[in-house]
Image 1 (cartoon, rainbow, N blue to C red):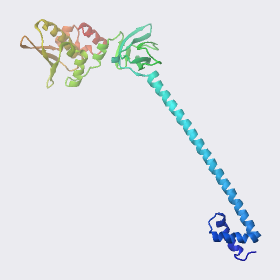
Image 2 (image 1 turned 180 degrees about the horizontal axis):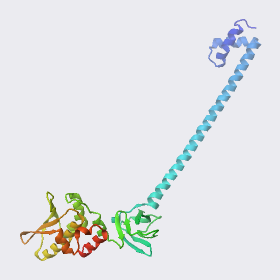
Image 3 (image 1 turned 135 degrees about the horizontal axis):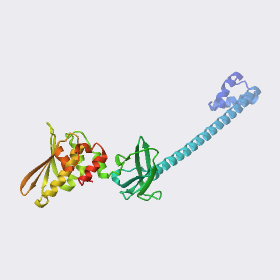
Image 4 (image 1 turned 60 degrees about the vertical axis):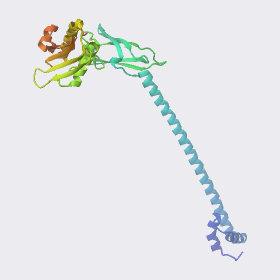
Length: 322
């Protein structure tokens, strides 16, 4: 046995030797000792075998973790692809098949109710859009219709629509979005739009402008400025027309303005008088119509007319505003 180093010292050095942490001089001393010492050589062999096993186990664990990571990424990738496919499918269905609700202003429509079957038909006005479907919602004697459109595609290409619905109970009022299109009889778009401009106070100028715009006063008689009398009753609205009225058209101008005034008095609750001014033959002319005079002119109580859309429709028919 080599007496250079004692076995106790060699045993202390072997772990570092196996891990290759000792110097060349120490390595030489250890290797010289184990040539002649069977006990230390056996201990070294055992330690080296354990190190190999440990390395193998570590490698197996690394390989396993790599497999798990690969499987995780694979699963995540499949999940992402499935999610993307679902999102794309939902997008295609929502945009090109189900579609979006149509504004009544974007359609021409007809409505009829016969033998308890409601039929709603018409045409989309936007050429790039196509009809998809119609829904009917019946509740408490009221039916609400929604029409859906989508970009024209191989899924849908027609802009015309017809849909029918059998009533479950008694219903006398039908809405197309916010417009009443049927109440005991078909209601014209113009009447429904004017009916929706009803408001209580003449002092609300934006609401007044909606009334005038929906009636089409500007388009038919020309531009005007507005002045309101709201300090004390009778409350009034004066339209000051900016264009000169030709003498041969003056009578027609005033008759049309009287018709418009009747409708204005009908849909604005506290409006008592409508006045208008214009220039004709170099003279500024002022005309006025009170609620009482308007009722006599129309042959109907204008203040009662807007309480029910059918009455308003009858009034507008009589005034040729239908």
